[in-house]
Image (cartoon, rainbow, N blue to C red; front, side, top):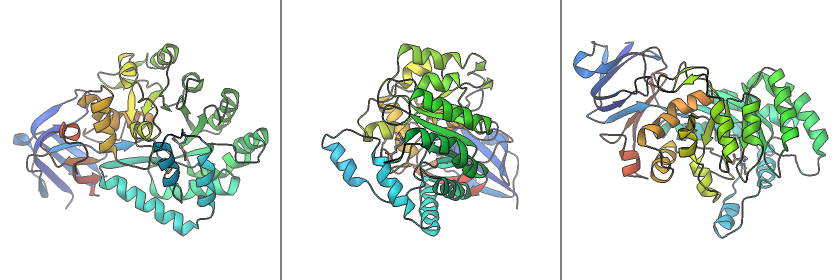
Length: 395
Ligand code: NIG
């Protein structure tokens, strides 16, 4: 048995270059790949048949920003924040200590559970980061464990200078032995470019060294205030800049300029720097929601991601992020679905094989408990995920 026909799909949202929405659609999966997409009346025969019973089918969510390698709990910090305290990056040290004290087996188990939770919520392609190790052995250990469970991993040694450590010496370590030790396990490097974390010059030094080592780049930028992160990401040709809560007109224009060689209608050309919005994090830290509308209107590709982490966004629910984007961020349903699928794929430069329902792409599919995808926002918080296929296998 190699092929499965998923038929009787009430609303099939392909997120393909034609942005097709097919009523009464069908998809054929051949092992790990999508083999056919179209109206059910024209569907070819297959070995097995799955009746979608009139429900909506989307590409699986692509979650391009998570921090799943952690131990411990920061619910007290969250509760204090809800009572009026502001978010401070120093909380990262609390998680670093708890994570350093967890064994390989404990950490692996935690990552496995978190990935399973994400997949149960419709996520089929997942990035995660180091960044709670903040030392050579620990960052390498976290990268190695992450790489076993996610599709692509990111080195975030430059998350915070650990307490009591000299910043210059720490950057020498991040760009030297730490990078070398993490390198075999990661595809990306990231830096938290923000007041209280790393300055523009420090961030540029880290990004340059990581690019020279062959890693793709991403930046945590403009999360807590205006700053240089977004423009630095654009200057360095980063694949994404994430958070983007506080943007000047120059920031938006700098990101827009990176998309000059891209045709967003057909999703072809050379991609620029994706603006990754993290609505669950914005709510949990009481930051203004990222200005997705301004970014889209300036021609920037936007991604939506969960930022699942213990400090600022302890949820991997992409359904929640998509609902919030539609309800609160002035994104249309189509824009939000695209941002949480193809947008994430672009942020991970994985758009050739995931992020849409097209022949030849990985069979990553998300069946909703609803006849149409608008129910994600129409019925927020309801259990919307009915079934998930990840690389052709039921998740
Ligand atoms: O993406 N901003 C930096 N890093 C995480 C938060 C980490 C933490 O507080 O533990 C984020 O929000």
